[in-house]
Length: 143
Image 1 (spheres, helix red, strand yellow):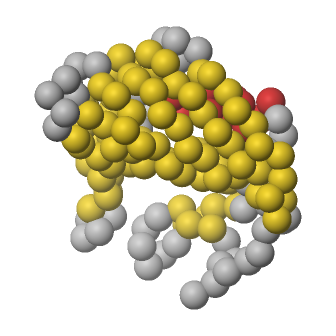
Image 2: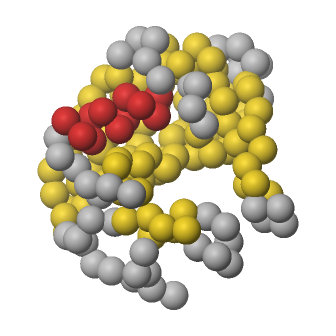
């Protein structure tokens, strides 16, 4: 196990633009405010959603579309760096019109209807992701 301490920095609250790609818009807010490490949470709704899951045996992501407009019941994640660029890693629980929930890793292609985002900056050495041979994932370096 590895761990590193951070202190809380600025807290940025944003309303993401209607029609934007969820992951791209979160990264844009982080970049605009110079956040290289942050904790994130959001609520709102999506016009379209794509989620994925990680197969621990094959080390591959399986992606699936979520039918119709959905509410973001919960969206949690982090902002860090991968090869020097901002990387948003987020998981979401989404609910359809019948209240049934589905969840997973947020994939590109989630189209914002309305979204309220909170980014809590983590002050310290930036978190950098690198390939981990054991899991096949891009995990935080040095932890």
